Length: 134
Image (cartoon, rainbow, N blue to C red; front, side, top):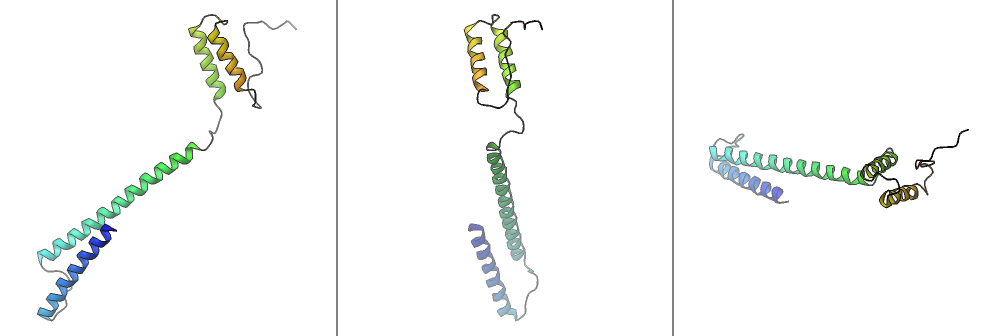
């Protein structure tokens, strides 16, 4: 709004200047001939260029933020929970050498509870027990 009103004001001043010259000379100027008119046109050009660039930058920023916000609400393409749990349990096992450590048992309990309501997940967890010979 400010840039439009500023451009309108500059245009009005330019028209007034031309009308004054027309009344004095009785001729229609096609191109501004004085350096003052040329500098005024240059200022208008710079103002419009700056306004367009500001709108373009603002639009780009809004689009980037909008895309990021929309991506927050879309589910991931693939579930990496199994790999994450394996890494978490491996890290916990490297800290606690005993499988019976309370923190390791807590992680295994959380691991089991995580997959309770899902249609996929690990079928069993080996706690160092060898399967019976078949």
